[in-house]
Length: 451
Image (cartoon, rainbow, N blue to C red):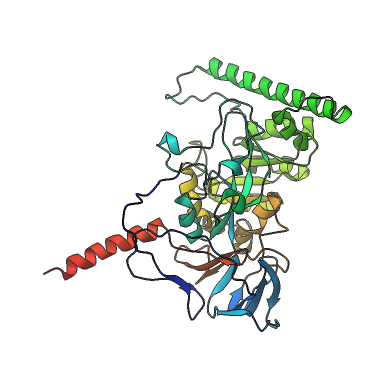
């Protein structure tokens, strides 16, 4: 599924290490394709010294120390006792934030949109609740290093499909295998809600009646699917040994019991309202994905405490009558109304766009969302919505040491990520973009120096 490099091509390996200031330094030597070796456990405690630490759940701490032991944060503050065997890394003048978290992607399941052989996000058939996204995750995807370089260290990878597409997983963006990279699997069951109104675009070949008939058929399939799953759940509970196991319906049991949420992709107001009604009927734990018209359903969402994963702030208006900045303002509207939300990069370009997650949050901040809320929308809030806030999302004692070191505010495009740690392991920040940049800079340096 990933792009395989020609193994016969000579490679010059880029030297990367922790130097003086403790930052990952990329040499300006030849960059002809780095092997992207996953980070290794340092084997000793790490002490990150002198940076301004932004815990997200509290005020920033200047000249702070973060102590990392066995991949976890064991102390944060200005007066931290450092073990004698600790490796000290001076980060004076730098900023430390939790690793950024994109709550809805197809990262690892898709490589090149136009090449079918690299697409592994969709299974055949309408109903596939048994599908597990992490099992198809490609740890060698070229998108992963590029995404890490932008500070995104965590992503919810979700399958796609017709109706019930499968279950998502929170993936850490460094590791040898998908097992290494899975922070937690079976996060949510993903459901693509049918379009409730006909599409009148001239490119759509089907008539309005045909579209509505198809909608009704899909809704009937959904009702029948959940009814069958409920019957199976009851039968298994009554006689677990005497009933044959069906993996599809087994995957539905924690959903029907309210243990696993359903992420329903619903965009306009009718889809959101229909999805909420469906969830109420089956007593499902609901998360709305997309939510373009969520601003018109504020009371409905707030009363039921239904969170919204906003799929992309950088987008055009959906209707000619919409304000140009409706999508830009949506996070601020939800925050002011008390609706839980987070910001995702999901949209037209899929995995290749996850690197722009911080820019989406920055745009929301420019259009009314308080800066601290914008940071939470791509760190703490996605962790809470995805059920992994006990592990990631803030710089807190006891959580994983999944952190980024920057030279400024991550919401600003001029900021660079200078170092990153996933569960305390230093992460390689080289990527294909940097490799190609250095390659062609070298080309023009040679041209300038040519006789």
